[in-house]
Image 1: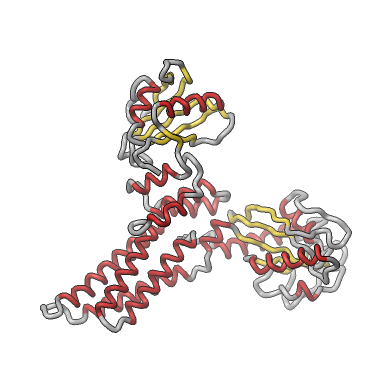
Image 2: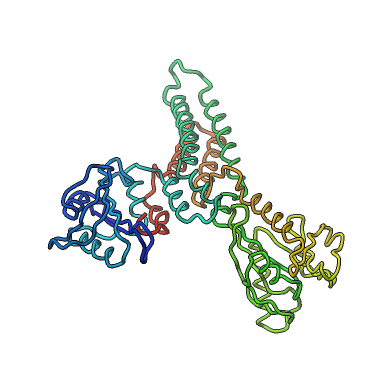
Length: 438
């Protein structure tokens, strides 16, 4: 990526539409806009212009906006062209911009330039990507908190405290013979202990932020003909899985995504648990067990017209949701595996509202959708884990000089989280999943 280039990209969706928004940013953005629109409009004021190519041919009549740097999204001279949404119009204007020396943007290049130009920190940039990808209200709210700097504000405060601790430690070393308080080193150590405790409290959140961002996985387990596929179809409101009276119809994992109380949830219907009859069914059951091991929540389904099977009972824990299906045929038992089941009928719909409510409550609990979860990516957790480890080194340091080095390393770890230090190696990882035009 060359930041000296002027870049452009379609910021709106592809295909035919009423309006197509084409963004442009870079040192030659003003020149290119003036050439297309017959001059620059007033900054931040929409102007209706005829766009012409270098040969003078009219390409479109469009609204154009001019955002001179540094007060733009990227911090550079930028422009937006609100075109008519036909593919031919977009292609013609893009061709004219290329002829003027601009090039198509790479994925995430606009936001990457905003980061490099100090318009946002790295966590806010990740929040932008999460906001574009948000499927549910809870994800949207979490992404907006990230964009607004919730994590950056917190880590910035930690970094400020850590800087003061380091200054005290250095003063205790460099000016040991001067008239300074004799307990500066002890104060720095005590401050490191308190700061590490706060960081560890955020690390001990159970991964709620990552789970909300990526979704809660629910594995539906049960014996053949327990009604797992019928239950999946009833919960999602469509025939997502094949239902048959023949046992063992489901051989592979069938996954469906849905929104429960603002939390993205993936329901995984699995092969019936039993002694496998052939190698294909064996593989299906192996995948069922693997998916249950990976799941955030197990939904154990039992049929009321059959005794509880040992294979599914093995997955019944206090953390699981236990379902007694087919209550239209026979009443549900008081307990299954020591757990009171949710009595439902996937066929008639009885009890499904209660099951949806229980699933929603579990999803909210697992994802912390009502909390201000701040750690949303493994990168955040890794940086704070490293900072905490260095603070522990500072606490245990036998020499003041070793304590100073540990505090300095902890400060560098916090800086990498927001992108203040040592970020070149991770920029490509952060921005590779962005869409083009953002």
